[in-house]
Image (cartoon, rainbow, N blue to C red):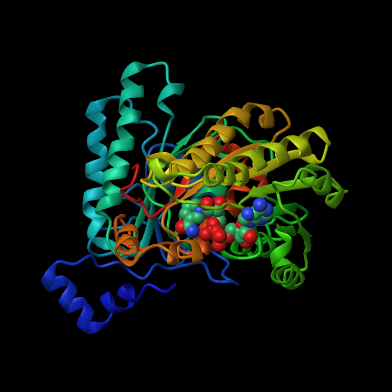
Amino acid sequence: MSDRYIDFANSDLGRRLVGAVGLPSPARLERWQAGRLRPVEGALLLGGGPLAAKVAAFGPRLTAELFSFADEALGLPAWVAGLGSKLKAVVFDASAISDSDQLKQLREFFQPLLRSLAPSAKVVILGRAPESLDDPQASVAQRALEGFSRSLAKELRAGGTLQLLYVGSDAEDQLEGALRFFLSPKSAFVSGQVLRLGACVRQVQDWTRPLAGRTALVTGAARGIGAAIAETLARDGAEVVLLDVPQVKDDLDALAARLGGRSLSLDICASDAPAQLLEGLPEGIDIVVHNAGITRDKTLANMTPEFWDAVLAVNLKAPQVLTQALLDGGALHADARIVLLASISGIAGNRGQSNYAASKAGLIGLAQAWAPLLAKTGGSINAVAPGFIETRMTAAIPFALREAGRRMSSLGQGGLPQDVAEAVAWLAQPGTGAVNGQVLRVCGQAAMGA
Ligand code: NAD
């Protein structure tokens, strides 16, 4: 469903009215277009500690316009506030900040540039995970970065986003993959997120087809977010296997044919689903995306056993049973990437969704519980938690609630299925084993559960 308010707020008349009355003014977000090569099209400013030099080394692969913040040490032209070009992206390395006095570096670095950000600018702050540091002072200062990052993300205008990446000392070689995602329009609807990067021995070989040579299974792929995930994984070079219920076989077959993939018509809750799945994947699988999901909303006082059972069975039990079957059947390849579609309802809770929120919180638990097991073979398992995404599921929400869902986020709008798909595709990359057992929200920094 299209969001007509964005069109209105970005029209000449709308801009004037929205400004005068103080209504929310969601920007038109820039998104990744097929055929684009560089993650950043415009000026990228680097500053801060030693990791900025690491980024400068591969920076020319990110953009043609690299600048430092008056720091000749990086060997880059200096960017001067008010004189230089508008900034499309900014990376600040805060990893060397080792006590609370030094936190003022954040204000000193960011304040002069905030009025020079281009529309849909991407900001990334780098740090060290507080729990990895022996010095309590340093640990406190690094923890403080979270509050700063989430606040500044809320202050950005015109579709700007900001994330904090805690980079392990053994994970610096995975920075490029993470920045290719967080500095590009692929992360258009991701903001205010905090992720940890750990060691990963695998690297992406070809950035134009990062999933080449990998086979990916997507459940619930006939429509909505699942279809977008299948398209995006195929775009990135994966061979795709699309799964959905037999009732939508025609749609599923048509999409699989268009993507040069295969289809599997299967109810993931059927008693013989594990056996059918193994039979359908004789060569095994590298990437599994558990996307199929349903809602049966009722307050708990009115919740029927059927509503409760159906949601728990599809959303939580089936991903557990099928993943276990793939493991037991030896079908899950080494370095496997598993992505679970959770929801911000599973983080914040949502009235009328006790069954759905339980299932989605359970998926987050699944990612956390299985991460060590997957890591033993170089694998990873993570959850993506979408916020309000424009799909059939959200089109069915009553108007007033739908409007509230759209606007109550820093970006003031709903996301698109493509936004969720880009996050899944990034987590599916060989190098993104650096992220394991974590939750990535794709929610425009929704107020809910933030
Ligand atoms: P959708 O209803 O449009 O599509 C879900 C797909 O899953 C359908 O094609 C359906 O046939 C399939 N499916 C359902 N039960 C199945 C079963 N038993 N076996 C096999 N396939 C089955 O939903 P969507 O909006 O695209 O959501 C996709 C996922 O993202 C879901 O897990 C949903 O909970 C999650 N999510 C969506 C939103 C949103 O705003 N749309 C927000 C948060 C999370």
